[in-house]
Image 1 (cartoon, rainbow, N blue to C red):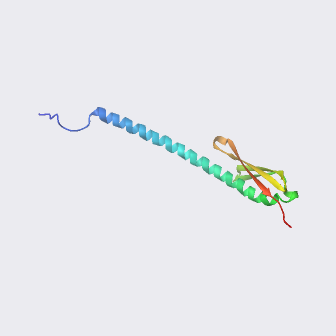
Image 2 (cartoon, one colour):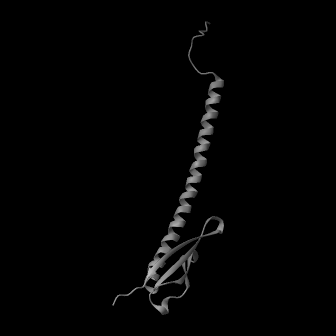
Image 3 (cartoon, rainbow, N blue to C red):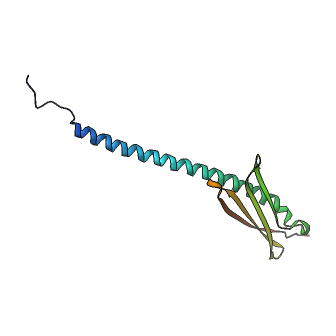
Length: 129
């Protein structure tokens, strides 16, 4: 039986090294995919809370110019019987019939932790007559 030394092919060592390199690459992709999934979920929770705070800000824009309605308060967003986010707001007299409205939105993150974001705006109540 003649063995030709010029035959082309891979040695077992080359195949093992290729498998190891491929495995490391696939593990890196799986880790990245898990991280991206968590980031998407975090972004969705933050977006829901931000929209909830923005809706409250728009409702309070009119209240700033009415003395009886310019009071601090709080409201809660529920999904079923579980709270998702809550807003706390307060007005500050900025002078010249301008009022600062600050809304702090607190929402749940993973493992029942909470995170807070705030939104502030100045509302002019100048009337021309």
